[in-house]
Length: 213
Image (cartoon, rainbow, N blue to C red):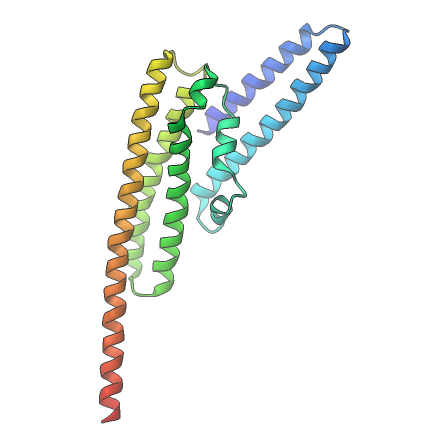
């Protein structure tokens, strides 16, 4: 993914350099060049935010709340940072849905993990297992985002618009399955947590009952 981002930045820089070479002294063209430079700066800032977001994913979950709270707007940054072959493809509803699923996957796991870890009713081994399951799911979902980037980027793949839409449909279904799996996994883990909490409460009640006799 990092190499892909570097390629996008280099392509953008090359484009601006070419425009700089061709620009004349005419006022309108000078103004357009300034706009291009400004857009490049904005684009580089967007890519920097994207990289920071993925670094958070790979380096730990302590600051992942920045994503779920909106400080790192995954949807907007991702879409704004792409040079789409056909603008209509980038507007395709399922592209936004794929990114929403990715954001939901990050947010919902973080909430569930914090709950299970703080509750004290799961062993360290069980918490590690939950983390391992999620890491596999996350790695696969990031592969999907990498493929989505290539599908939406003109220089990456030779595909017709129809082929790109079909690829987006496939990625959409896969991300949908992943979020359904995650929610079912969390639901089942939550049921175990509730049963254990209930068992502990019953044990505490029995203990108090015997102590009063």
